[in-house]
Amino acid sequence: MLALAVLAAGGGYGLLALNYRIAGPAQRTVRLSVTTGETLAGAFDVLAARGALRHPRAVELYLRLTGVQPRMEIGVYDIPAHASPAQIVRMFEAGEVVLDHITVIDGVTFADFRAELDADPDVTATLRGKSDAQIMAALGHPGENPEGRFFPDTYSFAPGTTDLTLLRVAYRKMSAELRRIWAQRSSGLPVHSAYQALILASIIEKETGLAGERSRIAGVFVNRLRRGMPLQSDPTVIYALGKRYHGTLSAGDMRVKSPYNTYLHTGLPPTPICLPSKAALHAAVHPAKTRDLYFVATGKGGHVFSRTLARHDAQVLSYIRQLRQNRLQARRKARLEDGPKARHADSGHT
Image (cartoon, rainbow, N blue to C red; front, side, top):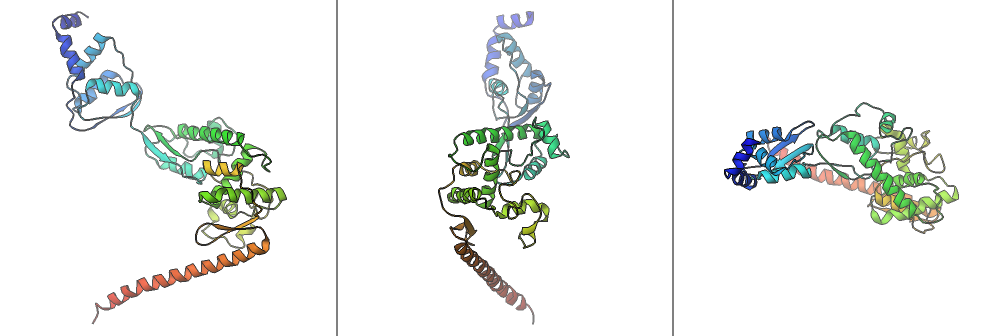
C-alpha cells in the first residue's frame, strides 16, 4: 500500500491511467483461452508474452488503485489488434468469448445430431458411447425416446461446451416450441396430445421440403386419421428399415414388420421419425381444410393431390412414366457427354 501511495503522490497515477486506456502493442488479433481457475494476473502475463500488453503489472496496480475487481468469464477470447487494457478488461467482464456454431438441419434424426456433436472438435464429448436411454437419463428425462425431442437450429457456443449442454439447450427449445404451438392448435384435430402432434410433424417434415405443401399434406394425414385409414407414408417405412434402406423402397420393404410401417398399421407410429422444424410443427396443428386423401410425387418436385383412389392411381402411373423419362434423359445426356471424350481419346492414336 505504501508503494501505491508514493506512486500516486508522485504523479504515477496519471501514467497508470494513461497506460490503461492507450492502444495496446498487438499488430494482429491475439487468441487467449481462459480456463477454470485462471487468474487475471496470469491472463495478463500470457497477453504480455504474446505482445498484446506492454505493462501487465502496471495494469494490475491501476485496477487495485481504482478498486476494480474484474471477473473473467471462462472461454476463448480474440483480443483485437491494438486493444487497450481497458478494452481487454471489458471483454473479460462481458464474457465476449469466441463462439462456434453447430447447425442441426430440419428433418435429421437424433442419431444424426449425435454424430454431428461427436464430430465437432470444439464440443467436449461426455456422452460418446452412451446409449440413448443413458443420454435421456443424463438430461433428466429418463424413459423418454429421444427422437424428435430436440429442436433443429443453429446453436452458438463457446469452445469446450459439452455435448450434454448443447443437447439440453436443444431439448428445452423443442419443448418450448411444442408447448406454444400446441396451445394455439386448431380445434377438432384427431391428434390428442402435443406428443402426437410432434409425431405427425416429423412425418410431414420428411414428406416435403416445400413450404407451400406442408399444411396440405397435414390435411391429407388428418383426413386419413379421422377415417381410420393407414397413413401409408414412405418415410415411416424408411425409418423402420434404418441401415437396411439403400435409396429405394422395394415391394418387400413395404411389408417390413415394424410399428413404424404405416402401410401395415393404422394411426401414428409410436415415436417421431426425425427432428421436425417449426414450420412442420405448425402444419401439424393447422392442417389445410381439404378433401384430399392421397398425394404422390410429380417427379419434377412437389406433389399432386387426389380425393379418390382412381385419380390417385392415375397420378401414380404418371409419376412412374415421369421417372422412366427422367432416367432415359439422364442416359442420353451421359452418352452425349461420353461421346466427345471417346472421340478425343481416339484422336491421339495413329
